[in-house]
Length: 479
Ligand code: URP
Ligand code: ZN
Ligand code: ZN
Image (cartoon, rainbow, N blue to C red):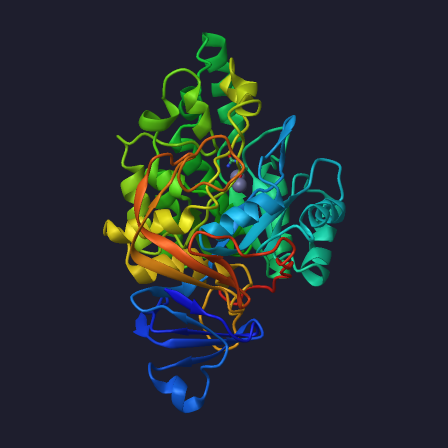
């Protein structure tokens, strides 16, 4: 690819193959003042006199919408520590991987007002992001005040999705009655409920028993969170959503075949149930990663946990993505360094901060899924860019290459290669990579955010503070 400079406000991408969820076509893209203003059949630009400005030759490249990662945790407190990417380091890393929008989570602690938690998250992010960002709201304390505040957030703050937890008793956990009440309120508002579906009460019993036996190593994190308890919680969440009047429900970070079966059945029956998975649940496993010798496995402690590769979860999740039983791929980017952070659980896996960092690599890892034949090129764009924008009230501003959309664009080299690792491609603020050594097909070549080139040929050209807050609308795609 070559870039010719010209008017900074006008960008013309020529010769590339545009890929959307619906198909692919050779076309040129004109961007002006941060938006896409024309999509032209090849050769029509001269006649229309639109070649002035900066020109990118994308011959032989895919031109796709900027990635939309609707599940990240920058600067999130976990126990005594905080996830290691700030909104600055995390959004720069996202840009390096072709993601131009994130939706992070404002977290309400017990006793806190929802509005105060949102203010705290705005203060962390405002002026510090390299790409655009929005927030979901975590409700950690479902009570009358929180239920009333949900309306305020939808009506005035651009927050149209709320995450609840069936896991983590004493932290964010809600019981079934609280979940039902929050779902009823979300249903009245037309908002989406996102669910961390693991049976946290049963898991806590298994953790206590494991520690009492002396089974304290990282792999016991997975063995005390069996997939059947993810399936059970997913079933219960769907049942509660039905009782709440078929409120739109989105199961986050799905890792297990049992959970997928519940979602597939509900979707088949016409319920408004959606789910996401993450690259770690498609590529990493209990045996190869979490069970590494000594304390190494701590790098991959996240909830839900990595599953056994003997149990077909990976195969089923890939198939679910292909069949639209899984609608979205996000990262659940929640990075902690091994040294001084994960090490809190040296003698007790339950004290290891939960989370895996991967915001930089989602588009790359999922493109490998295209090359390996798991999903089509179109499905890659649909699950990583378009559907997340649709489900979370960002479409058509984000997630599509359409006239009027933000000029968030990735130019993808299909024959380039990406080697992930601390000494290779790694821009997240972590002292290891969860995907160390992976050598992938395809390469992010150029990343454009609202008409500005922010990555080009291994150079970050963006600006901290360029990223805007995205107030989100209620989604038109939930029913
Ligand atoms: O282990 C994880 N997933 N950490 C982030 C918090 C969450 O539950 O999404
Ligand atoms: Zn979660
Ligand atoms: Zn998460």
